[in-house]
Image (cartoon, rainbow, N blue to C red; front, side, top):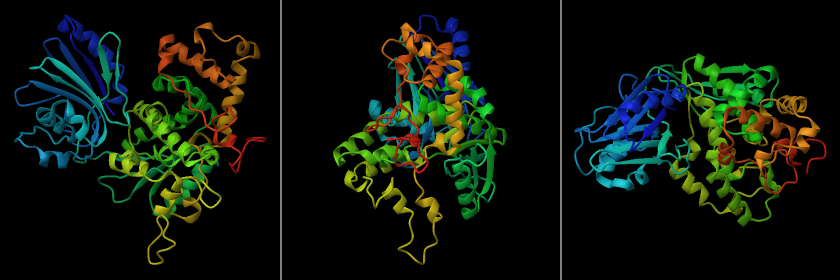
Length: 468
């Protein structure tokens, strides 16, 4: 992950530059390796770089041959090699960065250039000749890009192609990793002692032969991190905060080991209807509409978590399940094939793709009990005591009277639990009231529960008492 700050049509850019650099510095945790800036006419681009590969090259903003185009990017362009070969006009590349191909693509295709990209990205390009600034992001909005009401824009930027020596890791939801100079796969998990996901991760690591790092955190560790997590997330959504806190702590630990990038499983539950509440989908039409809604809102929930809680420590999370072609193919599957039945567990199609029971000569990809394990939301999987502790501590900070008389400035967006009230109060300590308009609450559909935990769903093997 990197950080981008861009300002277009400023009346006095040289005078504004110190302010721009200071504002970009607020995102330096996303790109701690190097800072770069570009000024032309009334525009300034500032880039805070996280170097994953090609450590000695790819500093940004990137420029074309005559300096008329400047580009600041955050992300990874998966099909950059193919795009280079498809260019109609010869172009002299200055770096090995996968992102540099955006410049000649823009020269040939103009505003249609983003449509040709496959990857996770957000970028800002300044066209000096046309005197215009273009901002673009991937269709899944994996890496958020925001424009400010006064005309300033910020986003996040770059990355390259050839591997460097940095470790590349995995987190505790079964995410895989690769390491460029070590022959063994590295994997990581985090949880409270005896957490369900930790036990499963250890079994998978042993089965696959990965070099596994099993981290634990305490309730106090998590509680102490809450305010920082809310600051980085820019959200007070209960589900997102519950899950982001362990990931935030894991990211800090693996960054200290030298890990800069890991693969994440975000998107699979949204694409395949993996959450337990999908058991209650009334028909395939409703099932499909809900998956579409979840995918469209990923940038406000799971991708927000993966993006912000890792970037807080200068770690980049990549999401293979949101590959453009995979997403298109998976969302075109007849939803009746995805629906959960008495014979089909959540994400049955995805699990079946890794099932080798019909191929006796094929080595299993995963242990059977892991492959067919019930869906466990990350905030539950790190240890059931985590959510219980959050509720208990919220009750210490929020009284019944406070719940009955919430803040008037919250308008219609009233907390429905003491935990939600507590998070909203911490959010207000960091951000002005109007920022609340960017927050989306993650709530399960077809459920009477206001608690978004998977354990609030009756089909969970460790459900709360009386869950429906």
